[in-house]
Length: 333
Ligand code: BEZ
Image (cartoon, rainbow, N blue to C red):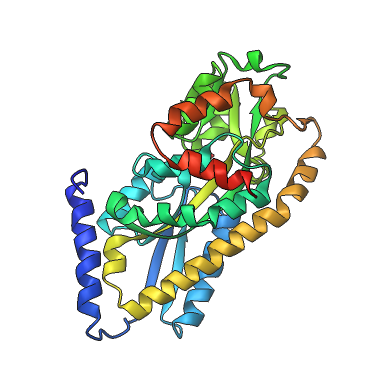
């Protein structure tokens, strides 16, 4: 607890006292429209499921609750949204797991390179007991409550120039989602990581500010990154998780029965997101293979990256025991 900011401490205290106070029989709240923010555009699966969550919440609450979605980083980038959740200025968010890794370093283990063989195993990890333990660390570390993880698929490499060997990645300016664990992987490859929010990636590729990107099929399709990065290496080199967050302050103000409604609705749509990504990932690859002018290099496995996976593990195992925990779990899937 000694590392907590005063805001996080206040939220933890508020969550605790609300639980005690409401045990005495607080009444369900009046109508409420929850504001949910995300960096992804309206076409993204997260946004579709956030809209569907409005209907689920309405059904579960006899029409009292609904959701209004703020897409495409309209409320700011992910770190801004996390701050808004802390203060209660924003009610909910679907954020990348990358965003919360600086607050909960254990979550960085989800980004271990080549942790899983395929997207079905990624789903199993995100629904596992160790993943639930990570979610329990969010209130103290971020002032938010995290009912569940979901995902945006597996990550691939897209480059402006064809890549023949791992040495060709050296010196390439690689756009990454801001997160130390992701940065480590690209630094170990000798690349020059360029952290930037999703909303800036297309323009950065178009104007030549970056040479390459670390990206998932869903976003590649939505944003047509292949228009400026015509080589895609199908690496599946890490899973890209999402975490559904509710402001701790907002949560603390809800009676227990309404917390249960929110938890159930959010969980329903985390599950729907995961199930959709698992079911649709192969079809997305087929769609991309049909794109004119896009060269798709399939089956680029960990061997392509030499000793980088082992070096990444050595470095990040010092930050969190969950690297070993998740490797063991993944090996048994
Ligand atoms: C990204 O930062 O690359 C990203 C964020 C959210 C969804 C998909 C991709």
